[in-house]
Image (tube, rainbow, N blue to C red):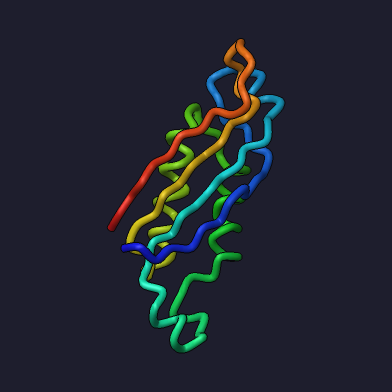
Length: 120
């Protein structure tokens, strides 16, 4: 499937991490989503019900970032993908990248991220 919708840089404060200060203080996480689905029906009809409402998808990502803390961003990416695939049956597969630009790793860096791909 080549058709896709991209949502880049969805951000919120989350409390994910293995260290107590990450759980206490929180930090900004951002998420990039790539939703793979057949966009031909929507492109021909101009009908929202034949595609995915990306505002609703973005809201789910924010809810999960700000939601129940997890140790790993891998787990956060999986939780986001499961929820979106569960709520939007038109999506055939999803690519989720979670960015943790303030991860406490002890060296200078610009970003740390994980990317997962899940399909039905």
